[in-house]
Length: 367
Image 1 (cartoon, rainbow, N blue to C red):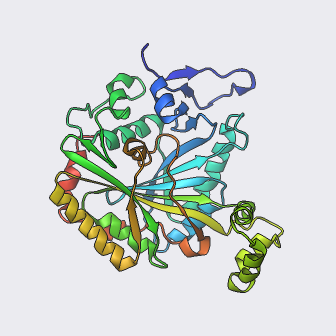
Image 2 (spheres, rainbow, N blue to C red; image 1 turned 60 degrees about the vertical axis):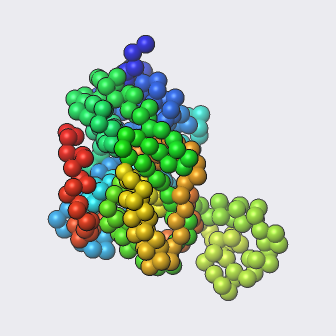
């Protein structure tokens, strides 16, 4: 049976003028990435009825240093998780994960469109424009990231929706070979890692240094909101003698004490989870050692610890591609106030890589 995107015809009340076209995805996307449906404007609907949307971040001419704080506050005001993907120096994408409150019901696309318009309007005041990545553009980006090391892959697919067979094998990761906790493809070897222990300060500067390392293919930062009720449930189920611990917090951390003691009338959402993940490629043992030496220097400078992923490397690779479910989070709990300026957005051009032009040539053949 030929793999294809099959149009889903709206029924009854769903029929609306100018409604977004929805497709049933090819079987392999549902089987391997759990993407069951997709819309023409690039929204992916997953098997648990959650959905993801991808945006390209564009800095307006009025975008100034310090825009990270209002940017963070706008995103944090919504009840969704989100990831920033830094591909190369200035190629930044934002993927939003919206979970269904009831996993037996589908996402309300009209509600998502209203939320999106509200978010885009608020971000326009920050000097940031989010460009929605439509279905064909999103598939092109995914394919580009997956097969950039594969010389045999067809890298000039004209239409991704209509020519699924041209990129199916690539997205199924058939060219990748697992080698312990790394991947091999052609002459390249890929390692993936995450920040296990964070610096007390300068997280944004730490990310900028990671981005400046030559052959650092992707830095991905994930943020997940935490409800006060979730914090209380975790605290009560994981701390023996939690009443004694709670009393200690009354003087040590009054805000956390008020949350855990239930003395707030509303959900403060003062905390969130954040994780930083890296993905780099090399063609020789010597080059790998050079990259790791630069990472070690950065770790000493910022007093952080980085650990290699020990999970299935094929599954780990999927975390660096804005396509399917999110599985490996590796996040740590932070007070919003401490990480509100962690996302490097403005003035990315100030970052430099050694021989940057030569490493960028790999991607020139993409449309």
